Length: 318
Image (cartoon, rainbow, N blue to C red; front, side, top):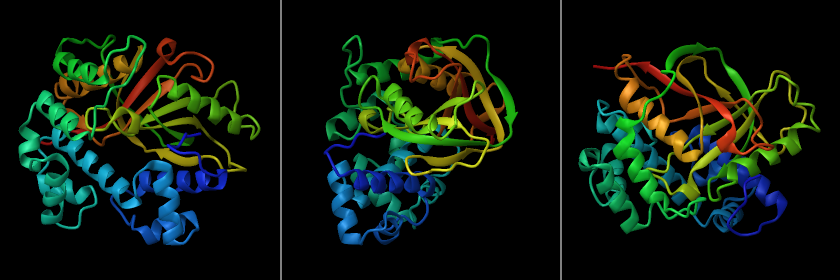
C-alpha cells in the first residue's frame, strides 16, 4: 500500500487512498473539496486536515498540480492540439483561468512552454522545485540527468522487435497505488497487492500482473509520479477495501516487449512516441501506459522481468 509522508491512522490511509483513486479517474470532473470529503465520508474540514497531513498538499493544491502536470504533458505530446482544448480537457473552466494557473505554476505561458526544449523545461522545474528532483538509483545518478538523456537521445534507441498496433478488449484490473519515491516502490506495491489478492482467491497460474504509469518524471517529480500495481480480474471481487477497480479500455495500443529497468522502460516509451508512432500514422491517445509482466514483480526484480508495453493510440490528426 502507498506509504504517506507522515504516519496516519489506518482508517485515514484508506480514506486518502480512496480519494486518490477517485481523483485519478475524475481529474477533469468534479473534484471539489465537498465532493472529495463525501468520497472519504468525512466533513470537509476534517478531510482537508487528514489529506494535507498525509500528502503535504491540500486537496486543492494536489488537484491543481495534477491538472497542470497533465496539461504540460499534453502540450508536448499532442503538438497539434489547441492550447485551450488542452486546458479545458484537463479540468479548467475557462481559458483565462487555465492561462493564469499555468503561468503561476511554470513561470511561462502554455504557448511558450510548448516551444521550450526539454532542457529548458527541466531547468524551470528544478529552479521552482516542481519536478525532476534528485532520485537515488543504484548508480547514484540524479534522475534529472537521466531524464535529460532520455529526451535528448531517444532518437538513437531502437525497439526490437519493432512495435505493433494491436486491438484489445476491455480488461478489468484490481490495483494498489504507489508513488515512485524509492527504487523498490514497484516491488513493494506488488507485495501489498498480493497480500490482498491471495486471501481473496484472485491469483491463478494464468494471472496477468499489470503496472500502470499515470505520470512520467519529465513533468512530475519522480517521488510524486503515480503508479498502479495491478492484477487482471475476471470474477466479482469480494473485498474492495484495499484496492481500486479500473478498466484498461477497449481500443488500439502501440505494443512492444522489452526487459530493463525503469529508466529503460521510460526511454522505450519516449522512443515509441517520438520515433515509431508517427511513421505508423498514429499518435498517443492519452497519457497513460500499461506494462503486462511475464512474472509478478513482488517476487522478481523489475529490471529482470520481460514486459509487454501497451500505450493507447489513435489515428494521427493532420
